[in-house]
Amino acid sequence: MSFEKSIDLNYQRARKALVEEISSKGISDLRVLDAFLNTPRHLFIDGAFSSRAYQDMSLPIGYHQTISQPFVVARMIELILKGNIFEKVPLGTILEIGTGCGYQTAILSNFCRKVFSIERISPLAERAKINLKSAGVKNFLIRCADGSLGWPTFKKFDAIICSAVSSNIPEPLVKQLEVSGKLICPIGNHEDQNLILVEKKSRTEITKKVLDSVLFVPMLPGIVDLDDK
Ligand code: SAH
Image 1: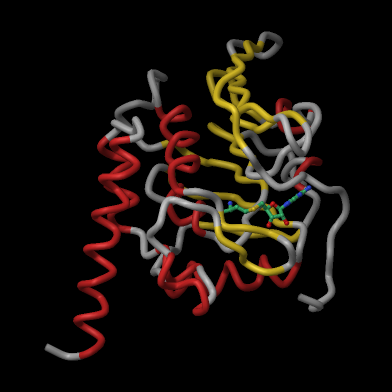
Image 2: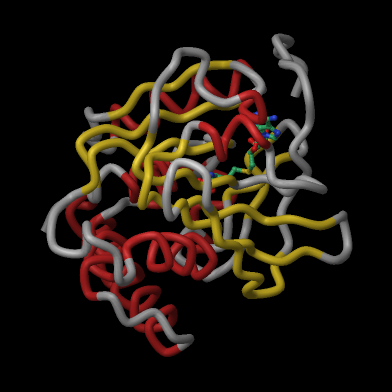
């Protein structure tokens, strides 16, 4: 067997173990588990950390940011897919705030026609595009912008997922949610945060549920254009 092939097999085994781990922690949606089984997380991580690519932990990706813990990504996606009218068919569009290295974008790409993703740090946005391409993902669009302001055209999304914590649910995001869509967002401060699930019941009516305690990097305003890691 070639060296590359045996490395690939090792990664496959490691991915299977990761899927068993997040399943034992409570993720039961088979579609979500399948997406984790098929997404090469090692391609989204700097070489120095590749031996830890399939551990259920967040890891540094430069610019003081991290790739999220797989369990938390899985949990957020499971919440978005659960019990709504879209359960059996893929969503149309998902908006992601905080692309980071693009790993969650890759997972999300399995569940919709197109993922729209916003990252405020320009070199990370560029790297995410390269990572996604090398993982064979095509149905995404990444912009460098302040995601708390929403996608900068008048567009509605079937689901919105934030990967950075803010003190309040950004109003532009609630506005860009389709009726019967779901928004999941960590809310709180640097030491006390919870996932909040917002459901848009009608044009004027939303419900909010406070869920798991989590730990995300902060949602910050403006964009960063420098390449000074
Ligand atoms: N989704 C990632 C996690 C990225 S970490 C994953 O696949 O694991 C959170 C990211 O949110 C960081 O890259 C950070 O730069 C970005 N971020 C923070 N505030 C933001 C904002 N206002 N708009 C867009 N991105 C933001």
